[in-house]
Image (cartoon, rainbow, N blue to C red; front, side, top):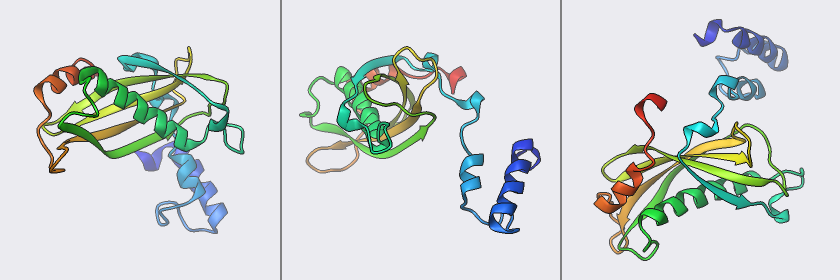
Length: 186
């Protein structure tokens, strides 16, 4: 339980000291909340949990003023990994009648990457619904086992002309199933 963990007790003590006796569970947002909710080592994504891999080249302009790749670039890499996977299953994209629309994105950072690092993306399909799919993506420095960042994107299939959601086409579904995460991994 969260309230009895040693990490929680330390975070509570820090929070009380930083905010002058306002307990962590009373105020919803603080630096300590963020620090205490960082990924635990056992929750860090690793390479073997992904099925499809791609390579990305960093560019000098990807680095921000702090000397590492800007957060927005990681989202771009994730989008590229998912889009390329979709295009493998449906080579006509983006010119098909039924197209995927991104409806949700989430990304967790573990450590930074900087140019000129070489980057690999790992992809897995986590869930296939009737009209949407959730793809998980891990972002790795080349050859590293632990992901520098990981997240997911949910795409809903829509009719290009009407912009109404539609059932995922059968041929697309078959391609998605090829990277579906096994139940024991979820």
